Length: 304
Image (cartoon, rainbow, N blue to C red; front, side, top):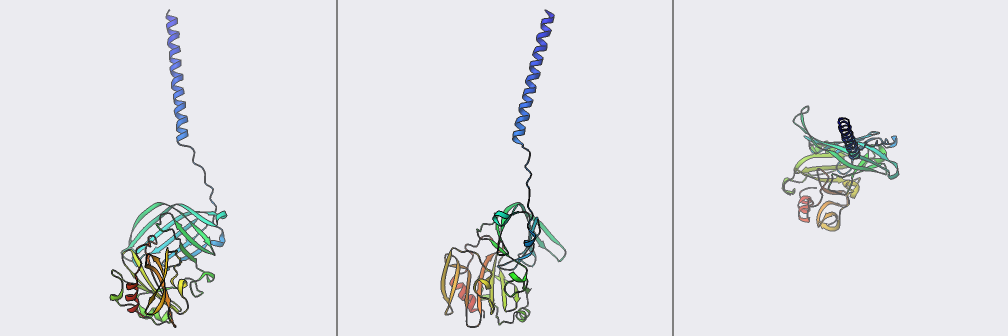
């Protein structure tokens, strides 16, 4: 009888052990299902023909460096504020584009030439750069705009607009700018500017002068030239939903924007060509920040 009891006890223990073992195996299988081994992503480097330095086309305030597996962008918002982007990239030959994920954006605020604060805005950026005619068209998933930011390569073939690499010289001195541009230009008086805008700086290249004004979030750019006109002068190739023509000081003007508020306007006289652009510093939301006809009239009446 004792042997029988011992046998039964051993049998029960074996069954319990088997049950525990089975439970552990099932738990292990479940864990394996939940946490599969990460797949290895095989990245393709960008071909040498696209590598190099680029500058942002619309305002010339950003520079881009393209390396085989990395893109970095410095975007100057003002004299003391700069945005920095860093993207690990993968070349997609089939679609002629450069993809990225886990992109990083940081904000730098300079308190002196050597001291600054640094804030990380995000580290999960995604998007791509389309390659078109030697330029890079940036489609960023973090942007609220569906229009790309265009970066032009810094070489003689893609120069803007006078055949020299990134030709702009930035200065707060109008006389210096006019000496470089060799054009006549009278900056608008403060009273003629839209409310909230203040002067930032001038930019000059042979034949063209630009004046930048800004609010906390928006930039107003006035361009005057005798070598470039229209979209080439403005550098703004964004697609806007509305296009209309109007009259300004007796001149026909082309306007592009949203519901009769122009983000881009250009016109010409017998001697010079003009362009007026309004765009956000973050290059995201263009809707609602344009100028109406009265504001354009006041602006142009206050300048030459």
